[in-house]
Length: 288
Image 1 (cartoon, one colour):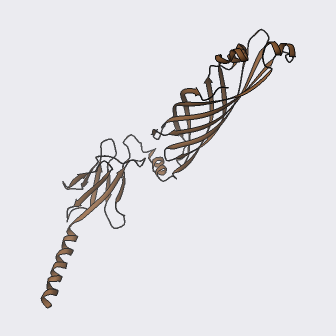
Image 2: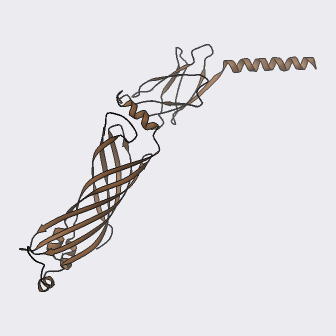
Image 3: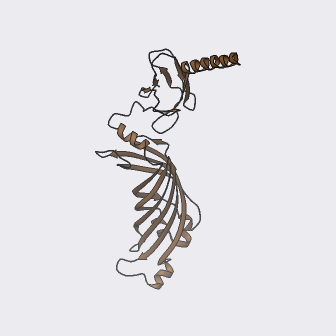
């Protein structure tokens, strides 16, 4: 019985000694956008004990006993960092590498953005121009009416929300255009646009946001045919098409939205203005 207890104590002592010598550290390496980085080098400081992160940014390193418990993480295109291992930090390690092009003055904003909520409100004031072709309706509406609808512009607010990189929004546009044609006949075109936006931030750096964007539009047209001083008489209305014509058109626009971000003197959540341009191809979804 006594011999068995001594054997158990010896085995326990050896196990404790081995566990004290061997320490495996696991970590996860990402960039400032929380995207895993492939292939960073992780070394125990002042040793040749190194490893690399895998395609998911995860690494495992068996520390050498009796050496410094500090890790140095390096990757091409990123600023190197050193991580001191102690009991105060949790495991696996969460290591964030900042791209080398991010200057010190932008670093506070980047760190703040990493701590910002996943859902972000965005608002905008847009001016939008659409080129259309309604020649197929010239027989029914009159060429002076369809010519007036070849181009129009709307302006109004847009309100949306970003969930991580996915953007969804709603916009309202009010427009007015005119075309003076057919002798003294004036064609007034009033347009209202209701738009749903859906996009994904393909590039989201401290200064640039590049977003492939789809927009679904409901366009409400109102055509008023007037003379310079008075309304068109009934006889002229019958000869020259509608006096007050209203119709709806739905369309989808696929394009690219490019924004340049401008910051104020302080950095914070949503503390920036942006100027952007959106261009794409519009296709109608229904006939008038």
